[in-house]
Length: 125
Image (cartoon, rainbow, N blue to C red; front, side, top):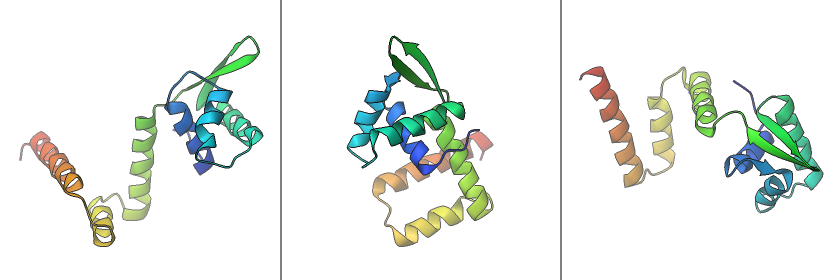
């Protein structure tokens, strides 16, 4: 799977909001959240093309960009990698450490319970 820097991930987020997209669309989406210059964003898009995270088609004088990876696939891969590196692949220390410093909402608790129940059902418990 492709490795993305934080800045490249921001560009991908802007592209995942709606694609295919022109460079001007990506720039507009990022302009609310960043102070990046247009040229910086275009450089990041070019890097993503070189990494094969994004493809493009030329239509007249414009380039139209499309991601080659889905957001869910990328975030799942990154989540697994993060949990493996920091918690030796165990999720419980991550969740309990987070819950100790950040109160969990009832929605978070319900979602966690549902995930555990689904897992148990699949395991036949």
